[in-house]
Image 1 (cartoon, one colour):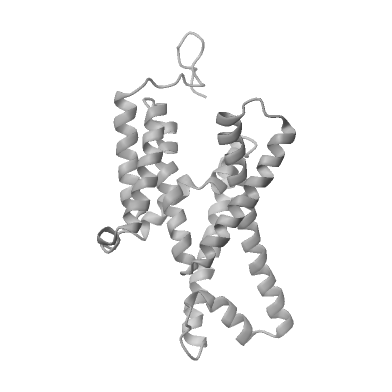
Image 2 (cartoon, one colour):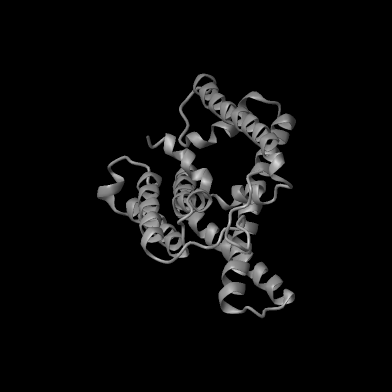
Length: 249
């Protein structure tokens, strides 16, 4: 169940949701789905094969199994080919890193600073706030990396936090008409706090459950309860001025 629950994290990842927000038309979704799923199947299958090949090809077990690709590259490939392959790895890392930095910077600048602290901020001010946010997020990430631990453990923690905080809220906002602002806030806080508490409390972490599972349960329950009893749902964009729903496409 914990391994399958990794799939729940996709619904709440900002750098993934940004791709959906940027699509040209809803008519392009089927094509995008085919391309995206095909690429995911190829990359995840290849990642599993790299690990299996490493078990056979490497003479001794690695101190850090996460370096299996680098070890295989150095052992099996000519130096100049190995350099190209490792450069490709760095390119993939940079692609994800800059996506995360830009999404985080935009969220801090537009959704927090511009929305709550300075609604009259000029474009010049917002640009400088965005740059400062990039630096701040990068420094925090660097400090976290220095704390040690496997890369997969750090990624799993962040994946669970984003997935549990935003995933249930986004799905309920799309498919549940009763969703309210109070429900959304309750879901975000409930999911995020549950993931952190579950990770930090030894008695809970030792159960073996991936923290995204209880996080999703708490976030969904909190959003449903608060959405049901607190506030009123917003007017849907597809409703006309008379309140009558628009005809189906």
